[in-house]
Amino acid sequence: MPMKITDILGESTGTRFSLEVFPPKTGVPETIPIQRHLSNIFDTVEHLIKYDPVFVSVTYNPEGKTRTTSIPLAAIIKQKYKVEAVAHLTCISTPKKELSKTLDVIEYFNIENILALRGDLPNDSIEAKGLKHASDLIEEIKKHSKRFCIGVACYPEGHPECVTKDGKKDLKRDLLNFKAKVDKGADFAVTQLFFDNRVFFDFVEKTKKIGVKIPIIPGIMPIMSYNTLNIVKRLGNISMPDSLVKKLEDNRDNKKEIIEIGVNYAVKQCRELMDKVPCIHFYTMDRWASVDRILKELI
Image (cartoon, rainbow, N blue to C red; front, side):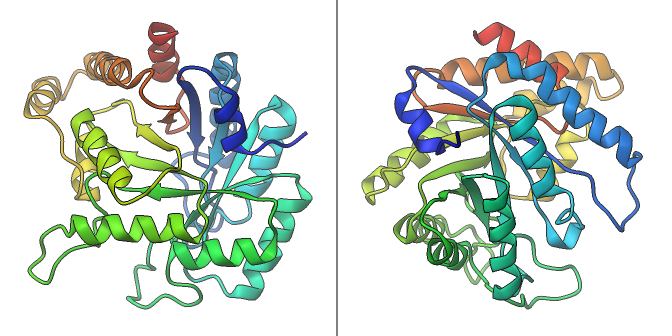
């Protein structure tokens, strides 16, 4: 029987956990064969299902050619592992007619939870066809069916594209953009990854002051390689403590030590979050070992 994420969280005591996996792309070169990619995803879920995750979310990116793998994969995970699946859905470059058909497919697979996202702009265009904002997508989902529980993304350090004319972060406007998604009907939110818990707690306090009452789930990505520094730089709006950066720089050629640093840091982060948040969301990168070690320390 399908359940809404908000209902599960409402019935839970203490902090729960959730997972995110990344489906294979089609029509573009993959760094690993699609069969191995799928195997990594199922290995990740199988090794971590013992921690009773609230949900497993499956990313979706039409421009990245995952539209044919994302929703079926979410359906398989839900059926095979008896866990709620959250289907990501982006609106950018997606005509309304196609969006309606996609929502029909999600309903057909008995998936009740959707993470409504704008999505990344196409590399070759500054204009987006179709809906332009996640708030617009929420409206369309609500029109299509009242059965869906809708999650959204939020950015404790501000969305990278939400800047003032002189290029500085416009945190006030970004906060209002988040509030707009809540006002349109968002039921819960998952944050972008962060490495400073103070940033998260400050963000939550600011949302409360403007009337946001939905559950806000912190997103944690364990450091699994030195390349995490490049990911952080590429995202552009995430800060990392100098002490952590130094540890990574000092051990850049020691893969094993980098993983140790990542596990220890994530455990510390999560311990500070435990019992203060309804759920902690792990960006697994389709790799289970670090998250398994972290959860063993926490539970």
